[in-house]
Image (cartoon, rainbow, N blue to C red; front, side, top):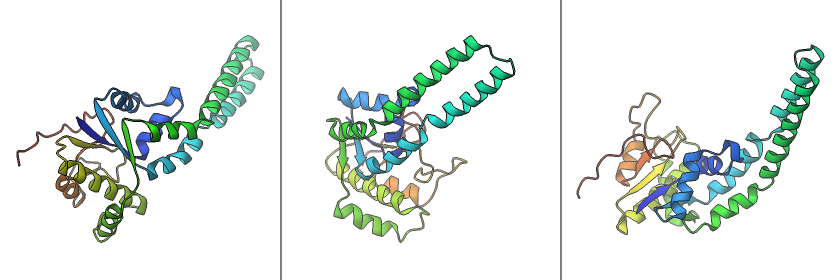
Length: 217
């Protein structure tokens, strides 16, 4: 079985309103439901995801901007009253639908925490100790990212010790990706992932970069 680590960006991509949900993020949880893979999520990521989910997708700003344009366009004769009425109805439906979904954010997060195919794990003493070790290395990471990296590395090593041979990390955050914007390896971050035998993908579809064959030990 493939063991797949995800973090906050996956929670946001999966829990976003339906029309903005990332299909590849949803497929990961569908595959976990079917038993094709196991997902691993550091518990603090659920808390961190709440703010962007409640703010990034608020419909009011977009809807009000379109309403102001519609009012101007109607007065200028660029849009007739019938068309304006249809657009206003769509905007009202859009705003009500998205607002209702955002009201269910806590339940969405709770569903992730309860999912049998997802291991939501708290930071252990070993992970906190690794975070301290990482603070002495020039990784140029924010404290939260440093803690998440430590959690993922330690849990990946534990899985490896238990015999798992296909352990990967879907990471869309450039700070935690082991390559720079030009595709060059970032050291010492690359070495940390390599030491944990943890392959990092830059997408939720697990297509890029192509995973290297596992070398026999």
